[in-house]
Length: 69
Image (spheres, rainbow, N blue to C red):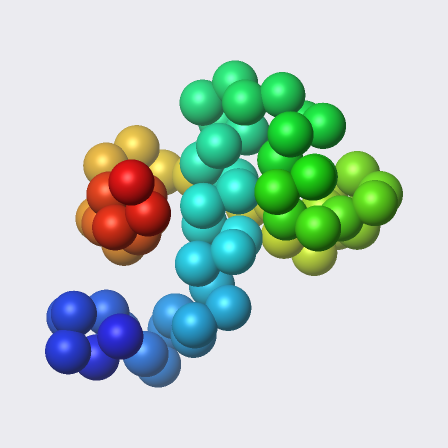
């Protein structure tokens, strides 16, 4: 992550899970699909621990989603 220019004092490898799934929800991916892809059986778990507010133009999240394509 450091080689990619990601501030590892703020973001950890597991941050990508929250970033990518939160962005998917914001992009209107059905919650059932997000839960299935994320391996969650409960939307409450996702909402409590992983769903984050997404800022428009967030370079980290945009980079992660582009790498996933």
